Amino acid sequence: MIQAVIIDDEVNNVNSLRNLLTKFCPGVEVIGTADNANSGYDLIKAKAPELAFLDIEMPFGNAFDLLNRLGEINFEIIFITAFDRYAIKAFKYSALDYLLKPVDIDELQKAVEKVTLQVNKKIANEKVLNLLQNMSAEKTATPKIAIAGINDTTFIQVQDITRLEAQKNYTLVHLVGGQKIMTTKNLGSYEELLPESSFCRIHHSHIVNLGFISKYKKGRGGHIVMEDGTDIEVSIRKKDAFLERFKQ
Image (cartoon, rainbow, N blue to C red; front, side, top):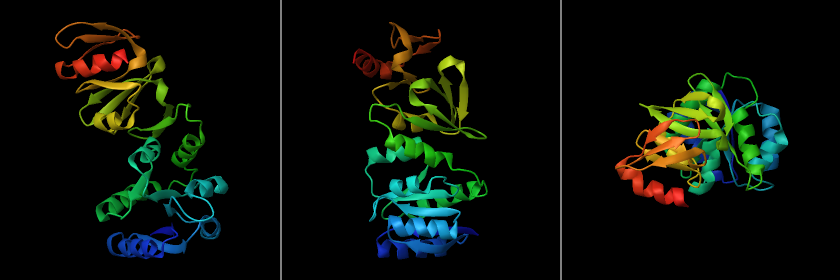
């Protein structure tokens, strides 16, 4: 059994989530609840849970205030949020699970399944630390992104990604210096996540960092040449949008 706590200031939400866990996630045992950041801090310190369902907004500070106060994070977290799509990117950058209110049963089960695979790793939760660093960074700073590999997760600066290449349901991430990481996410996941100001999908198999393009060669769709000499086709369908983006 995974021992879990729920920290949410709305009683109805706490009761609803507890009931959903009892009915649909029998491998999770709720060992305590709290209704604000202060009582949540005390609950986590007293109970040492393996998993926390954590609401974002609550009295006496938000979820990030609570996590910063705790310091070392050696438990898994599933955020419960009503944040908009833009703010949710912070969770995606750090490969953290979140549930939108009202909680969907299928999404809850998927999140719990993923946590179950991680809960035995009694180490500091690097994903949470990366999230807190990104949330506290200056708006002009380049955030780190979690790249979920076959065997581990690597945190890298977004600006160090030169291009991404589809490999069926996987993605090969190319980095400055020639390093490559095979990630278990498909290319579409990164198209949605990476900043449009820097990255452009030029082909069904390729997303490139515009800052690392050396040359564009004209043609039906054309080709681009990256700074490392790699030649990549631009699809006819993507050509106009790419050229407009490249001008910008």
